[in-house]
Every structure is written in C-alpha cells, then in structure tokens.
Amino acid sequence: MLSATDVLTAYLPVVGEHRGIAPTAFGVLLSLRAGATIACRLVLTPLLRLLGRAALLTVTCSPVALVCAGTALPLPVWTLGLLLTPLGFFLGVGQPLSMTTVVQAAPDEARSTALALRLTGNRLGQVAAPAAAGLAAGVMGAAAPFVMPGALLLLSAGVAVRSPGRSEGAGRVAGERAGGTGLRRTSDL
Image (cartoon, rainbow, N blue to C red; front, top):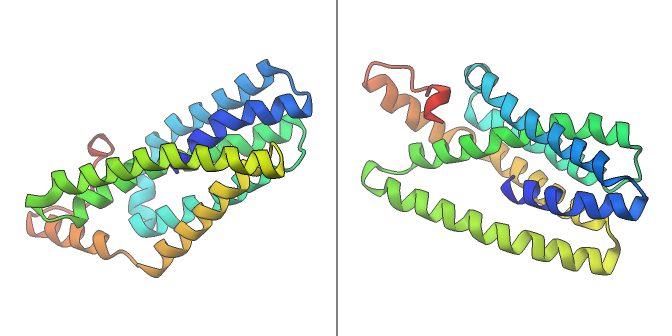
C-alpha cells in the first residue's frame, strides 16, 4: 500500500499533464486522498472490531487495487475525485494494520528485528515500485504505472484471504491471557 501511495503521488500529475488536466486540479485530488487517509484513523478501531485484522486488510486491499488500475482509464476530473477519496481512506488502513500485524506475529524478543525487516521491505518497495512504474510508463504510456500496484495489491488481498487471521488469533490469545480483548486502541496503531 505504501508503494501504491508513492506511485499515485508521483505519477498522477504526470497523467494529468498527459491528459491536459490543470496542476491545481491534481493538487486538489491529492489533497482529497490525503484527507481521507487521515480520516480513516477515526474509524479504524470500530472497523477492526467489526471485521478483524485479516478481513479488514483484505477488504481494503481489493478496492485499492481496482481504483489504482482504474486511474489508468481516461476519466474526468470529478470521477477521479470520487475514486481517490475512498482510495485514500483504504490506503490509510494498511500502514497501521501491517505494523501491528508484524508486532503481534513476532515473539516478544524478536519484535524489533521484525519491525526492522518490515521497514527495510517498505524502503525497498519505495525504491523498486516507482522505478518499475517508470519503466512501465516508458514502455506502455503514462497511465501504465497504476496497473502494477493494482495487480500487486490484488495479489496481496488474495494472500490475506488464504491466511485467515493467524497473527490475529495469536494477538487475541495473548490479550485474553492479560485480561483484555486482544484489540489495540487506535492510539496504539
């Protein structure tokens, strides 16, 4: 999801220029996406309680994948705004959930190592995804970079479906042993 955010932020203005859309319009579109990303934090805890961690990651990866790929279509600005607002919301879910999933899955003595590996993976993705997107744009056109993160996120959603809550169950068991529900507050995310 982090790479999808980077690709969107970097290539959306390029697509806009290619389609003759004013730079200020894309500033507004990116602001809508960013605002929705922040707004998702207000309802993250109730969504976690309602759906659970694995289902929430799956439910948020799938629409992000479709919207990322959809931005490659020649859509009017107002339609892009309608797409980028929920996209920002769903992108905002991935970062805190992936962090807490890693923390809950790792044994206490290996949490810092697990988080360091997650951070390393994020940084590699932040370098590799835009570079691959640039290659795709050079070969297939300005909108092509949006299809790649869409496909990767769809694959991620499939992986999340196939691994039903293994780390979530461990977190719940540990939390129940401590007398709690195993769910974390939004401030802990």
